[in-house]
Length: 253
Image: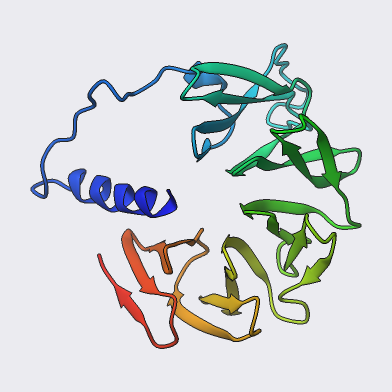
């Protein structure tokens, strides 16, 4: 499923560059107008026959002073492609962002009180729970029963993982420099680590062996994704693709 998404990204990227590729048209498969475009808060997530997204909910007020938005009321929805059913999962979710879905689990970040926590939803049981720590938690990503996220403020962020099956919590990048934008597939976690004032590394870690190495470098903060043993990220307008093997970097632009 994830592999298909990466392939689609590469195809679309080539099609929108003038003089390269051919026009892409939708058939009966889509697009599906599931939600009003002005209400979407962040990019939707997909897994199996489900789609997950976050919408803003009325009333939307204009704060004083202008430009200051302390919170945005949100709602979390899912859509089942097979049954063509839209379901309201969570009607009140302040400043909800970054949804992800895999199997029967869904995750997103949400402001709760003075903190930002990771929220979990189980499609089978219909239960909603929160993963709370003493620091801000952002950008959760999910693979089977493991969740990874970045925690802390910019400049001191760390990558953490929670195993929903065992209940164990792991610090994957503790003691390192600023680390953020994680993704996970099976036993592999990747993230971005700031190496100096003008440079970043795409780091890969094997959860079983503990082996960790650099997949590639980038000049700007980015959101790498991993699927089928391949990592993909954007840097200065180019798409980079790397094998999740030491020394296996293979950039494409």
